[in-house]
Image 1 (cartoon, rainbow, N blue to C red):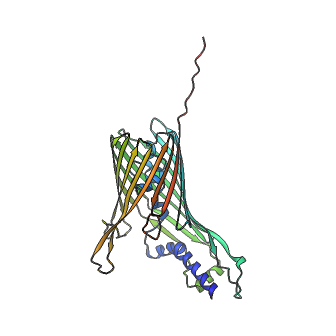
Image 2: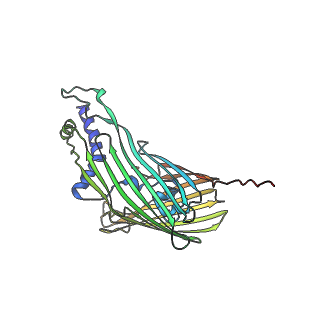
Image 3: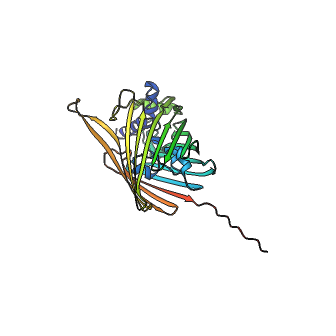
Length: 376
């Protein structure tokens, strides 16, 4: 009985967390919570400002946040990487992005971003107990549940000075060991405009409605175990991520020795979530705010606020309270190397800031040609 309960627990967590989601979405047509790993974000700088970077992002992470910002990179080649661990180091989130300037006259820039979120070494106890009721731990294997995305991004200047556009094509691969997986495709489109101290940005995510097509490869023995333990057998299905619009505005002021950047984002979606402070039956408006204080353009102190929600009182449902989540961060720039850190709350059970995020960015300098004068 002890081992039977253990098997049921593993299967319940496994199917509810990873397999139940696509099946539920296929049955009720609900597009919520699709590709959630792509809503987390990349780069510790952005996390420290709660993702409020759509208007001013100007490094390689723009391939994720707003591809139009790639054209504002002031280096011919740039590389960035990020690592974070969540759920007590059970889940790993990794990102690497790199890109280069393609044409200096049109200020065009191309980049590749790779994002992976995975839970590795999950015990597969489907074959732990044999047909005769015997327990054999040699039959326990491990598998990984991983979400992988590759973003191909391009940006260039258009029209008036300071105006850029960009787009990202997304290829998504979600896998659940050898049991099943999904392929997905989607597109993002971004715009930025800068003049003096003001920056504006627009990011349209999943503009063509991103989809994931799931397929499963379960043996008859696996299906029998699922059935006897009371778990639903997953079936092939399709997930849909509806388009989402993010509007951003940023304002910079102060002096080089002490500068200030204030930025506000407004996330507009139609996923039906009603927890947002400005949410309705179909339309959701979720604002985020970010602040960055720069000291001599070398040290940066950051803060952000988001997840502003109207919480219903459990005792009196007519009363609501306003709650929000703060993030903080720190950055250091040493020449062409930047190291950023953010303390946030990503996927944790409690409301405390317990997610440590670290990222590194490296810019390569322009190649300088040496001209040797001719001797006469």
